[in-house]
Length: 154
Image (cartoon, helix red, strand yellow):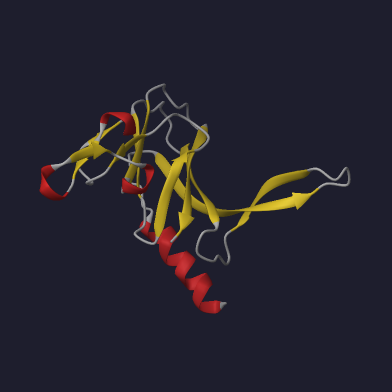
């Protein structure tokens, strides 16, 4: 179990967001857990990812806050998808751009992969290696927000 906790801590450290003047950033990793309600229905909740097994659904949350004294606009939040994870889609917050090569970004539907023999195919969720969000609206001093994406442990 200790090794699994260290593994998840290493994943959190890899999900870095470049610092921007006056913007504090924090990355949190959660595991999705099904909970049975008294009514018999099932709901999902997020719990801190202290341990996980391959296939476990995870949620990466990037929280940002303006710690400066002036509004900050056009913030770029950026997160690699760790190699031990498979990207599963956008979460809460603005719709992200994704990259399948770490350099070109766009909507997943607009990206393609050139495979063996030069055959092109549409990019898939499992091809995504990087996610980024642009927060255009000014973030006032003391204000902030969150963006997230879903992934699964390989």
